[in-house]
Amino acid sequence: MPVLQRKKKQGNKISLVTLLTGLVSISVALTVTILLISSYQSKKQALINTTLTLNHTSAIKMSHTIDSLIKSMRSSLDYSANLFSNPMSAEEGYSKLELIRHTNNYFNSITVVDETGLVRYVSPASIGTAGKYITTETAKEALAVKKPYISKPYLTVNTKRLIVLISEPIFDKDGIYRGVIAGTIYLHENNILNTIFGSNPTDELDSSFYIVGSDGHLLFHRDTRRIGEDISENQAVRKLIQGKSGYEQMVNLRGETVLSAYVKVPENGWGVVVVSPINVVYEQLNRHLASILLYMLAPFLLLMLVVIWLARRVARPFVSLADLVSKAGREEVQLSEGKQHWNREAELLTRAISYALTDMKKQTDQLAHDARTDPLTGLTNRRTFEATMQQWVEEQASFSVILMDLDRFKSINDNYGHQSGDEVLKHFAQIVSASLRSGDVCCRFGGEEFVALVSHASAEEAYQVAERIRHTLEVSTNPIGQTITVSQGIAHYPSHTDSAEDLLHLADVALYDAKRSGRNRTEIAKG
Image (cartoon, rainbow, N blue to C red; front, side, top):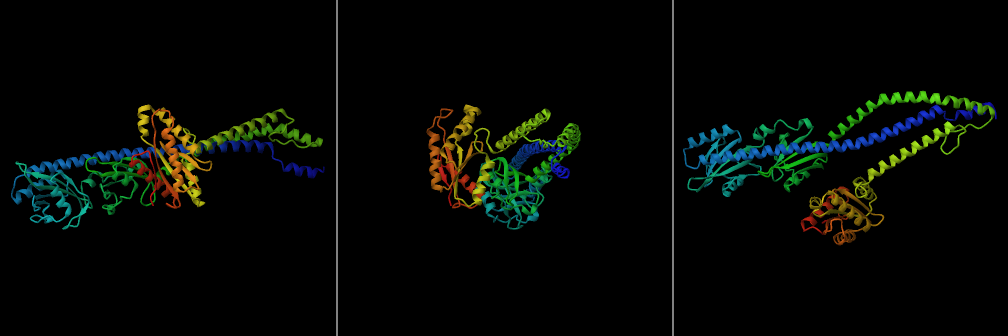
């Protein structure tokens, strides 16, 4: 073979130095990538949980503050009611109201109304209602109930202010009803809520908060223009109206993902919502990853320098041997898996690299499997479920969603222990898996909640599948030896909705209807 052609072929080969350096670089890069992905996911969940917990703690504290405030306001009005149980002059009544208003600073105005609806005294006098009869339905209702009363936000007739009214009944010494004493909070002006919460206690958490009434209207917000706005459609506010307290990731009315904590005020039915934008978590994650990369940069560069130096030392005898073999007219030996090398060290090195790559692949496969699978039940997790549902929606394939929730699962954990509860979850997962076809998807959605995607099935067909699951669970021999039941909600795409998110919501509503109707039943979404 001509020398020029032989040199040209040799030039197409990868040098041992480049090969070793490249392999080490790939190994390090893959390892770093896996570590970064794992760190990102674990740190993300930790930050979300921490933010939710901190928001919930703040909401609880503010709820307790409001609860104590309302109790104090009611106590002040109740004490003041005793002062006005007997008739007095207008001047004396006005003086007492002025003293009460300026002493506690709870209310923007205080009014005494007799049992006929006539305003006897009012402070401040500039309101101008003294000597007139009340006209608003809210004031009339407060007078009519003859017991402590807190109103929803409403507009006054004279001043056109948005206010909340708190009243206490007045009885004379003989127990005869003599009217009410009412204090008002001007929501759009300086008031007791501004005084206490004007300096946002959640600023250090990059969070914000607001206070809502029992009907979902804003009572306090840093943006005063929004006070009085009806936000009852907000997910957190809906839960407050239902009497629930808690924290979770939600989507607000502007379509933004937020971390919300919501707590009910026991005394008056108001609610406190503390929210943090999800972007706060991602900003912290980015800073976390940047710091990791920064700390790893110097060791990585040092490692690469050492690898290049060692590669040159290791390659030196191989280069000499290659020149010798070339002069003898033999083919150049290539370092590749499965090929026997003439050099024992080269063979051992090839095997070591092969083992390293195999082990790395196993780790990567295991991480990928763990990312798709629920470790307790062996079912797919929520991520796989959402990806599958989104794919089917994009393909416009007909399918149904069955949302399943084990009835009274908390009592199972409380009475039999969490280990038995885990066995129940695995038992139910086996029943669901056995009841579905190979093309269907079932996953553990969280806690005792499971969800199934039944492909090419109408709502009625899915109902038959769900009833089979429900009946099988009810009559099956289970780990606790007691009857276990499940409630289920069904929604169909696209007859119920063409949105994946709405589809899951409709199934959840149907599940709620099943729970509310007595549990151990299956409901199909309406509409």
